[in-house]
Image 1 (cartoon, rainbow, N blue to C red):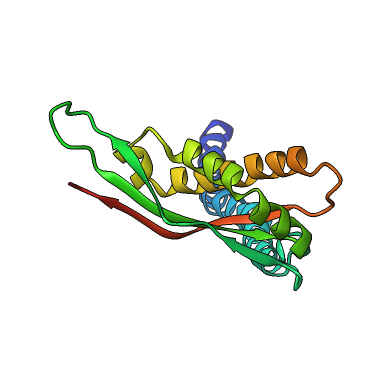
Image 2 (cartoon, rainbow, N blue to C red):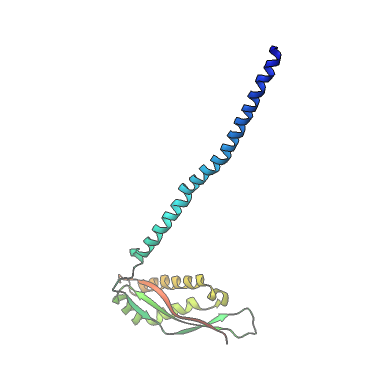
Length: 180
């Protein structure tokens, strides 16, 4: 009789231990993804959302990018440059552009106006011998403007070493590629 009771007592223990295993596995399969989602939200998504709104407000009010009230614009004449084509027998398109520079003060604009030929030659050199795909790319257009600004600031320091101001920005007033 003792032998008969022992298997009956073991059977309910097996079913209760399998029930506990099912509950643990089910609870873990629900809790682990939920906790992971909360952690990802708190440490990944929330900082990205908070930093993004701070970055837009910081760039809108960034003092280093602000153009001072003393800034003076110097316009250059409309110019043409030949665009390189891949077909040797086809006529080359023309890049027609006009550039302007924003100067930090009137002293810088006076130097640029008096030595305008140097700056015009610099601008023409930068825009010459470019392919159509290069000139159509907005990233290349911005790179050309940055290069004009940097090289014009270097030329300004060479032409007038004691000047305190700089060229703040170069910008296109006209930018067109014309097929002939």
